[in-house]
Length: 161
Image (cartoon, rainbow, N blue to C red; front, side, top):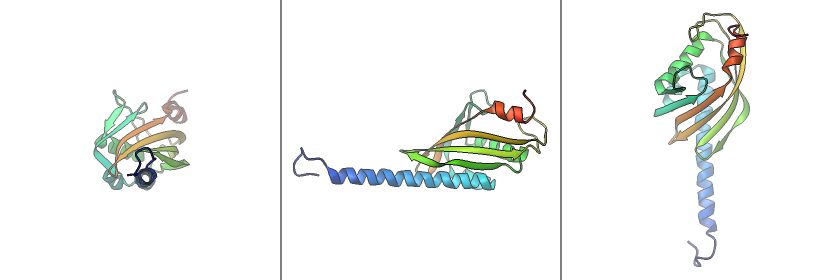
């Protein structure tokens, strides 16, 4: 605390900024682990990084509320890998962190070789882009806002003109 209350508290500001940078680095590390697990089709690691209160919020999730919980999120990944066994999750831009949020721009590619959300295999290759914002608390992902164009995927699968 400065001797003069009118003086700025430079040391306190520096400590707060270092704590914020440390938090952002830790959050980035959690999301980079999550990305590596998605790329490796490693459901156990993904599960270990999700908080019990985790929620996925997305305009592309096939549920009436466009939300799903932790178990639903894990089931979505398993269904994706079943439908697209060669699914690849490619980072387009390095993830960025701000406070407790981490943003990722990605591409998803794969060949539709298995049933996916009721659609029998088409054998077609897919390539979509999207963006995700993750919220991290205490080293666990608590929220994922995920957005991508399902119309592009449906057209690539030959389901929609």
